[in-house]
Length: 440
Image (tube, helix red, strand yellow):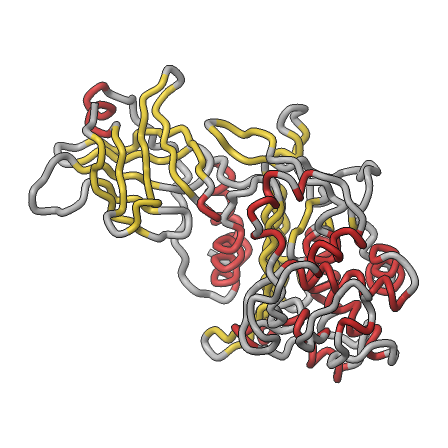
């Protein structure tokens, strides 16, 4: 099987199972080997995704914000070692917090999206950039600047304000004039008001079935996680990062120089097998995205999804391995669902916990619409999925979910095993859980 066929075979497994809604692009040596759209941009109206569909890209935005800062630095309008108080009168930290600290998540400024009121209140209310800056400036530092790494969206909000202050224009307009238009990224932008964005997918989450995600007012994310784009535009971005089209080679080196926790300026920088990998994950209500660049192999994989629990990072890494000739396990492309039996249901229903972590709690329930599982995922948020029976033996019943590649193997009472449920998530992580509540 050639590389293109192997890539197609892998993604078709996800497509036939309904495990991916979004778009994918893989290119190597300036040639696209895979470009595919799956699922729906809008479920309620039956609008399918296309390779032109726009998606919110979350924190992939940070790479663009960092590029904007370096553009201003190269013009002599900023210095990386400048204290941020030079550009924001509302910021009055006694410690010296620099632009470099903001770019590398080493400022000590708390992450405002992790505060208790963010989910319930902050993200839902329209605001101005000045109001966000003032609210961030009131937060005491968690640690002395430069002493450690702690991911903080707050820093990239402050960088947004610095860009606007120094350039005397809006963040979106500066990026449009100096990055997006020069690169021909005509389907990329930043939502900062209520304007309709044509071709923008709707974001979803899951509770029994696909549902609308929690509302976020797009005046909040800005240069931290507020952009939208397409796989084609992000490929143009990837290609430009090999050139001096935007900034000189000297400044490009600074962009990708790793600091604490392998983070550069708006990018994670690692080495796998001795080769350099530059990437960033994006997550915003109803959307997940991943931009994965194997720069030594001139390979890029881009995954954009409008379902917020899609394992985009697994997809990009698996596809990269396939393109580089490495073995990857593919999903079965044949339906293997069985008729659910009363015995299998009765033997499986119950509550299971990790004895060393009670927050890891899996509940399998029988309900009028079928068998469901409820358990926590990213950020500890609970999700509820429909289960399908795929195996039933004298020793266990095995179930899979409808919308994500998770497996639940429930073992029948056994004294020697030490656990009752073997849970494998979409990334292949295995959890051994024990019965807490007696099965009905």
